[in-house]
Length: 575
Image 1 (cartoon, rainbow, N blue to C red):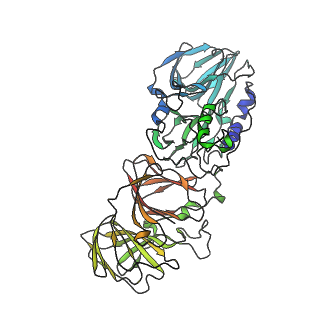
Image 2 (cartoon, rainbow, N blue to C red):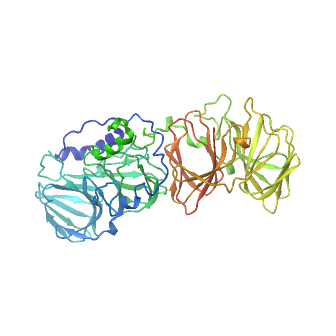
């Protein structure tokens, strides 16, 4: 992880670390990558090569119970790696390299256990629910939700369930780090005694825990920074309902599940909260932040000398979320339902989703919502009533041409003695001076998405009408899960944008987040399905009929996230 999270974690655990005298030798400072942080692993999805998510994720309910200290019921979630290859474990959850086990433990009501942890092993407990006491050296300590403590071979203990319900814990088991100092007493940490801190990975809000276990909260409808790093890192789902983005896959997570990030250096992770309630997770950082040398050597084959400075660990812009300095994502979006209708071409109802940037305006700080375009006058939704005809009208097409993509309905378009049938997915361009007629047929409105492009100097518009039908053309894969095909292109007469491209995103999938480079105009229109959008460092709901431009900062990433049961569809244009 980057320095930011390291600083945050140290601050959160300061009280516990100071009291617990077992300290590891100081680690050398990690080098900071100088690579741009505006995208994740660009390689396409390849099930044959990508780590299998289901092997790095497990649930304690799937584990056979065993007993420790006589009556403590333990069910392991993650265990030591059972393979020589850390990227290909043999069974689900057998993925740990430094931590020995990540487990769920239960002490039934009225039960008590006594003992001492094994020589060379320490166990770090975090209480989920229930009430009890832990006693060391004749002193009782209350145990309840939010309480954590570490058991070491240096002292004996007694743990009692004093409540009427089971006393439940998550437990991290690991070897005592070398050169640590013995501590003859227990240290008990209550996370509620520590103020919450915000800053790590955009929106993590954490307030401490025992050494090696920190409880982090993800606020409703937010997404932490997707990132990857070389050390061992584990997360346990404690409360709520989240969606885990791990590598290039999405999966719903429920309490009791835990995962390890595959140690590839390019498989990023993020815990998305798409609900209306906070989500709680336990973060288990690496016992030793030294980079896995085998992984470094493997990466060095393609990245050059094996050192952190030139290893391209996958991550987005990792600077802390700072609302006053971030581009206002909402200003770059517009929905057709929010736009005031106007009439064009005699009978065509138009609703503008995006419009041109105000003259002299700052493209990163628009003064009017949706007024963000620099190469077009408008990106709009158009409707033609059945039986009506759209035609040229005075004052239109001044320095413009319009690209139409049929969204629904049937009809015809004609010009210059040629007539074409219209249906979903067909596209055409209307240019200045063209004597055209568009007629809606059937009993439904004929609808379109329309791009009014500014005609650049030296560009000669096409004078003949042509309807392009690429709706059945082969799709290509891009950005992990996007299935793309151009519907109409510059070769067909577009003046500014390379193409209007149709994109399909399958169910339970997230496209690769990336940022538009400076001076690049990238526009998206959601045409079918309601999705989530990672936009900069925030999540936005994107219903059908929404268009947005990606702010061209070079660092403001975007990605569509489809957690519904149906595919979602988009159009996009880039210049």
